[in-house]
Image (tube, rainbow, N blue to C red; front, side, top):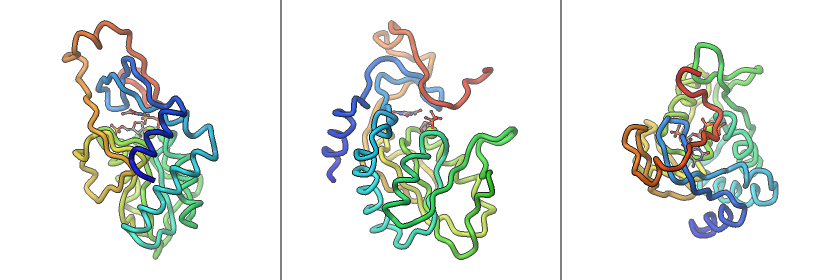
Length: 196
Ligand SMILES: O=P(O)(O)OC[C@H]1O[C@H](OP(=O)(O)OP(=O)(O)O)[C@H](O)[C@@H]1O
Ligand SMILES: O=C(O)c1cc(=O)[nH]c(=O)[nH]1
Ligand SMILES: [Mg+2]
């Protein structure tokens, strides 16, 4: 699957949104990839995650566990794990910590794990996910995502395999271009806004 094929999936699913969005990082953008428009279609999800699994296998070799950050990462993590023949677990928000493994999830000794994100913008959520895994007995060998919208600039502190790399502008709240400032902002994701 080429980048154009993957973007065609996002377009035909209605997952490429234009407007004024507040992202997980608090940055603002005129573009939002509403991945849930993909993930509500299991056949489409299997296509894109199957393509991601091929890239993961080519780069990291054997994978026993896929670990994803909730909520957006759960469905693609599960579907990518299916294509890899791996287990799927996830980290989720936990009082006092950005993310934690709960529900008895663990990466056992000797297991090779890959972190699978849906979208990478600043890499903050991915880094928080990886930070929650440092005490696990098994090894996190790399990271992967469907779309890296940082243009390859996000630094996760480990290799990142992206099915598509885009460079989409983001703006701090006090540096909005006038056309963006003119539109009311919406915040689609699950991370709480500061002070909320
Ligand atoms: O690289 P970053 O700057 O962290 O941005 C990307 C993150 O933002 C979204 O999650 P969000 O926190 O909005 O919640 P969701 O997973 O529930 O969609 C997305 O699923 C990534 O996890
Ligand atoms: O940075 C984000 O929060 C983000 C961007 C995007 O395009 N899609 C998404 O689900 N989250
Ligand atoms: Mg997320």
